[in-house]
Image (cartoon, rainbow, N blue to C red; front, side, top):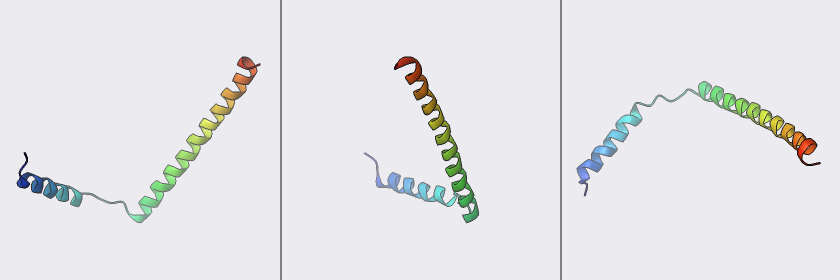
Length: 64
């Protein structure tokens, strides 16, 4: 069974680590958000093209 001192140490350590966090600026957050959206759109477009290509191949050669 853990003592309350151990739990107190845990939360103290958590607070210490939270104070070490460097948060992005507003401009950095906007830039990172736009980057994630663009990369997601590009990947979804690539996957859609592959899906369409495989569908066409299946209809042409497997499902006659």
